[in-house]
Length: 239
Image 1 (cartoon, rainbow, N blue to C red):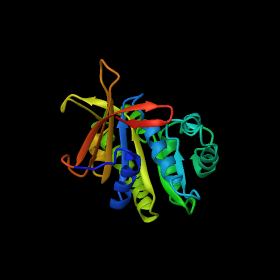
Image 2 (cartoon, rainbow, N blue to C red):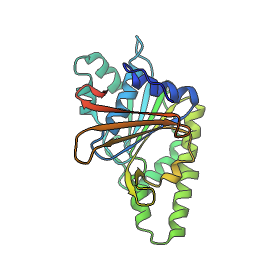
Image 3 (cartoon, rainbow, N blue to C red):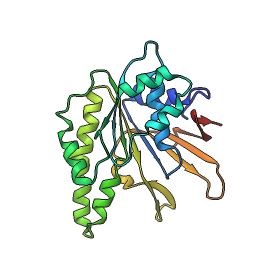
C-alpha cells in the first residue's frame, strides 16, 4: 500500500518516483486535471527549497504550455512565478508539434540537445496524440505494430535512458480511451507503456457527478492508493 502524506501528497509522488528511478505516468480524460497535476508536481518541487533550485524541460507534444494556469496557481507568490517562468524551458517554443513526423524528428535529435545542467524534470504533454493519429491512418495491423515498436525503441526508450542517466524525473501525460475487453478506460496503447517502470496515476470523474478520483499505483496493483480530489485555483487538493 502506497502511503501518502495528506498534507503533501505531491511531494510524496515525487519521492516515490525519484527514489525508485521511475517515470511518472498521468492519464485521464479531458478536464480531470492531468496538466494541472504535472505542473503542480514540477512547480512544488522546484520551489520547495530556499533559494529555489532546479529547472524543467516541458515538451508541447500536442498541448500548449499552461502559462496562465501557472500564474493562477501562484498568484499570491509572484517570486515563485518569476522563478518558474525562467526555469521551465518549453519546446517547441512557439507551438506544439504539428504531426507525428515533426515530433519524431525532434525526439531523434533530442539525444544531441544540451539540457540545463540543473534539470530535475521533463514533461511531455501529450506524448501519444500524434502517434495515435498516425496509427489510425494505417489499416494494416502489421504496419501499426511496426510504428509502435519504432516509437518505443527509437524515441521513447532512448529518452527514458537519458533521463535516468541525468537523474531527471520524466512525466508523461496520456490520452485515454475505453477498452471493451477489460471494461476500463485505459491510456492509449496501454500495452506499450506497461513495459515501463512507472508511478502510474489515473484521474477520473463520475459520469453523473463531479466527484473526481485519483488512483496511484507503483509496481503491482496491490501497491496503490485511491482518494477523491478537487481542482481549485491553487491546484489539486486531496479530500
